[in-house]
Image 1: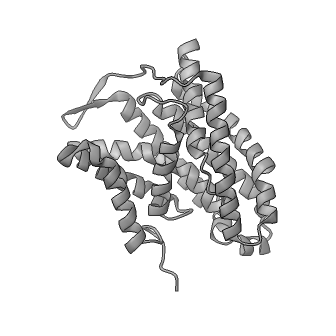
Image 2 (image 1 turned 120 degrees about the vertical axis):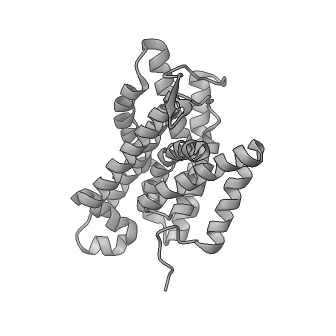
Length: 288
């Protein structure tokens, strides 16, 4: 039970990290390798406001979300939209986007080191135990899981119930057909990229309550998010949440039963198995 609960809490954190990348890649067709750096920026914002003004990270997310949305919208419009316009096919767009965002990640790391320095940063927020089913867990981790659950549920409902959400899903499935029914694909792609960046930055603010980070740790989160997105299926929120939980429980099981040093091995082994036997993701259909 302890492994399961710890794994689910860890999986909730992973879901926060991966949801933003899934929106950006699934709808905008941009494999954003600077996604992890946006998470670290959100964490830096929460750290700064907490240490300077004792502002709760749970309140900081209401400031981080709109600012990150605007920043990512500008990144898409200024840097990525020209790539979309000139791409002759999806393959060309993906290569250009990967190279561009790879460079962008180094720019963002350099700016963060210039602004905040290269030291690790952390702070103590809700760092006390709470008993769940007879075992003690960190309250800040439990709160992060609750935030992840609320955010995932809200995003899932919005995508499946609202008119704007259904339009975004239509673009994710087929941009060409979405354009035929009057959907403004470029406009929605920009919004989806911005929303994905905002979700990632909020995730950074939340996980900063219990993780120690520095300006260069973003690449680790990008790789984890990439694994989850591929496992869950591109553009599929349900698949992303399930993949995050599977990865969290799997890593916790390996760390508890075998060796903590093998968690990364377990993650990539699981990733390879999914690619071999379920490349379309958990809920995807095999191409006919």
